[in-house]
Image 1 (cartoon, rainbow over the protein chains, first blue to last red):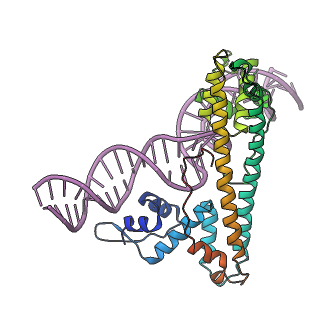
Image 2 (spheres, helix red, strand yellow; image 1 turned 180 degrees about the horizontal axis):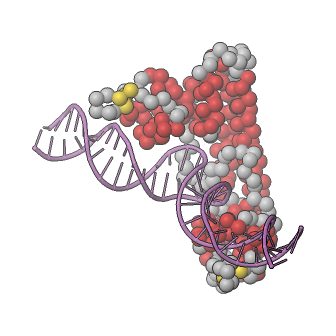
Image 3 (cartoon, chains in turn green, blue, purple, red; image 1 turned 180 degrees about the vertical axis):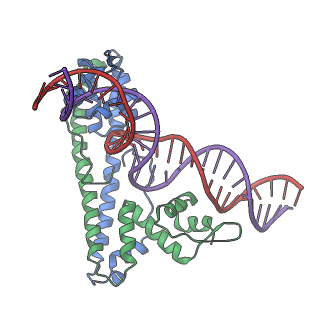
Length: 143
Length: 143
DNA sequence: TAAAAACCCTCAAGTGGCTATAAGGTCAAG
DNA sequence: CTTGACCTTATAGCCACTTGAGGGTTTTTA
């Protein structure tokens, strides 16, 4: 099948497929005489796998690791479990960060005072006075 | 004060300060004869404000809007409230996405089966079979 | 006083996961 | 034989920085 058909079947765009190819996530397909890419079923399987991983917000690096593990199907699956566990850790860390963030934002919202003038607005004052640390990247690759 | 002192006082790096200057978030300071930047208290106030906004994961665009509103202190503060409300909406949308994601990941984790071989691993099978949509960007500028 | 360390400067490129644009080649239908 | 739908490559943009190269200046130390 041609790239457009593959894209439709997997629910992504042609550019995304070419991007995955450059990234080494998807193997290079055969080309016809017009230099068009021609794909087979196993490309679609692999692409769907990748898209499912992306839907779960795994990074390309995580996906690459998974694909490598799958290329040795007789190995133990512990590393797969570990990878997933680790990824869940990323997601949960990010959730905790955002919940903390939300409560700070709600506190700030309370401070407004509805004074009608920006110079007296409790929100602006709060933003000027807060002493907050920026969350350091490291516990999560999620934004 | 010089850029390094400002950076220490605000808890960020020299490069970040120069970046904010290029972005138009922080006004250009005076220079000495060696072309070094020299900052005053109002620069520090403004930089701390920006860093606090960033700690609350506001985008540069949101911060720019806030700074513009603050430059007209006698205007009504309703737009400030609106901006914050809107930003809280972004954060809450992202939290909902990640909670949904977490439950999907936990389901996947259950499926492992601990068969010890990758080829029979329920996680890998789940990732191959899932039919998930990727969350569309639009409700949030958060990653 | 001179060397070394610590600071400052600009400019350019890299990060991640795409998306968008430009400028062109190929193919089937009318 | 032209129109439109496909395909190709290459390049730039997004966001908020971070890293690195390749310099110049100032402060500290021997």
